[in-house]
Image (cartoon, rainbow, N blue to C red; front, top):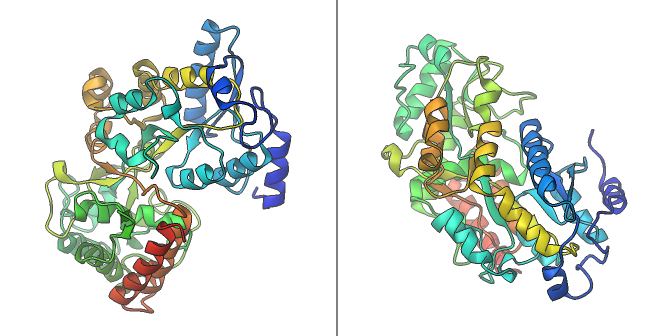
Length: 430
């Protein structure tokens, strides 16, 4: 059940946590808090597999740290976890750690004074760089510091229904989906044959994050890894961005991707032949759908080992109301150790943001070959840009995309050009 923002504020105000002083900015002396140890509270995602991992991780820590115990709970229910977290920061009672921090929300949480720079701890930045490699640079804030620990990703790929493809006369084992032309030809065949109602059915709604599952993965692939904003300037008003937008516009214009919202999972329900999703979907679709997975298409059909895609990551952040931050930092490292990352991988199928993931867990991928392609793809992910007004940036882009690409009310170059100017101003903090 969804609740209004006042209800979220009330939820946050009541969720007073151990190790927090309720001041909103952390109160007291930051250096003292950074050195202090003791009990801490953490929030975990309400995803059942992830929750099971979290409970086991907490039990393992608590068994060895009787004087620094973790008290864990699910993120309180609300319209979105980001609104709940933002309200808790405002109320001054956020927990020490949240294992579900969205990278797009970090700039706002930082602006609220709600986050602790992990560089504050001895070896903090070095630990993140060693664990995650060059990918970690995408998670730095504009001031060069880490306010989030890169934790896990769900690199998105094209899932396709083998039975629908076979019904449409397409090769279900090696589907022709590498180039835009191939993808469109396959989509037309699916629709004209009646094999499925839609070739692909991304949400055509206007929420800022929807572009992460249609435009952005293909933009990352087409550009070789550019973010939506780089160097304070929008990157999507470019030949690559326009090619991606025109590709999607064709899908919508020809009815290959519907313009109406679908209440449910169109792929699981057999309404759509394809979907853009991450490895979490393997356990969800399981035996319900005979599926395959391939990288997102590019205009020229780049080799799979060169394709970059959206990460769909969630990270761990430390919140400034925490007063036992030395313990919180130790817990962050414990929860992202090789052993705990292996447990997360086994329980959830999500990809820990570690260097050379497949080599770190060879036995797991040998026993679960369906996840191997996602492990390979996890090394080539693109994150949302860490810029001021991040959510507003994405909303400005989504509004222009919806107007031009989905509903065809404005030429793509005009819409992207106007959006680029607005996004540049927002990303500059104005």
